[in-house]
Amino acid sequence: MSAMQNSQPILLAEDEVVGICQALIRIDTTNYGNNEGAGERQAAEYVAGLISEVGLETTVLESAQGRANVVARIEGTDTSLPALIVHGHLDVVPAFKDEWSMDPFGAELKDSMIWGRGAVDMKDMDAMMLAVLRQLQRTGTRPRRDLIFAFFADEEAGGDYGARWMVEHHPELFEGATEAISEVGGFSATIDGKRAYLLQTAEKGIAWLKLTAAGRAGHGSQLNEQNAVTRLAAAITRIGEHDWPITYTDTTRAFLEGVSEMTGIEFTDNNPQVLLAELGNVARFVGATLQNTANPTVLSAGYKHNVIPGAAEALLDVRTLPGQHEAVMETLRALAGPDVQLSALHLDRALEVPFAGNLVDSMVASLKREDPEAEVLPYMLSGGTDNKSLAHLGITGYGFAPLRLPADLDFTGMFHGVDERVPVDSLKFGTRVLHDLLSTY
Image 1 (cartoon, rainbow, N blue to C red):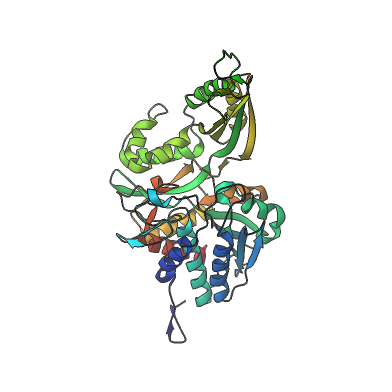
Image 2 (image 1 turned 180 degrees about the vertical axis):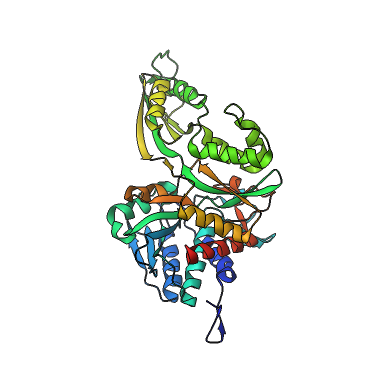
């Protein structure tokens, strides 16, 4: 449909996406875990207001005080087609102002980029979703299938108050949907001077674990062969230094074969590092998907210098490859040893879906219409997304937040990092690609 209606210019999605992104970043939705998500309700009301403004009904639901989720559905023209969910999360990880060169919640424009917490993860995609939804509504464009737009709380703490709660308590809002797209995919990387877009078709599983070492409490000046701190330290050292073997899934193998084709460097099972070296800033991001990982992140023990405590604890962030959860847990129990107990605080599944099918073809086509010479490769995410929760409803999820990025920008290094920022041109590019996909698929 023409961008003109009743002789009045229609505001295009790419014309307002920057302002929406800035407004979202300026709402501090820091998620500290433990049901501390201040700002999510304000962000949800802002999102619902933008959607209602263009005449679409919204549903706003709180899982707990202030933990708000927003869902809206645009009806398609073909009721025989399954619905597509387009989802994002409104919360962000903490940011400490004295570590940043800009106010992390200022959303300032500098060097043609928007700076702030959430610019990458993932208020950029939230803004693209809203801008595209609003353009579809303004122009009266009906997609072929129902589009379900969802904005979740609490993704950064596992989704217990967000996507997981919505799936468990309001599955009817996702009725008829079989596929979903969300964050951390569709962004570009420069490989051997060529641009490739990494479409996320897999993500590792999550196991947030606690190690508890018991011992004999006593005076700090005495001999103590049952020191809980010593037992724990030995266990986390064994775990932290464990060399997990390289293992290829269908996704990681296909990705490396694609890199091999782009670079002319032969891929064998024994040389992944040679190919990873061709990825520049993306190497670390992708390299973590070739093996299981288990990183100690928090230590807690004792209360006084001269008192040996009776217990000591540590937290582990474990990320597992598809189909390997039980084997990893068995290895961790062996590494922890008989004096250290392993318990799970949060578990979620690994996902892997084919780099094939109508949705994949459509995502690739939408990217290539904007960037015809680029390649598109499947890849696995080392972290996790709300697609894990939607998978409980049998919904196949992909990562597709399209961004054409400068070759020298360490985009993947900014996830949960300092001085997070997204180029304005990348945001507008992604908005055009997303509009193309949602109006044609």
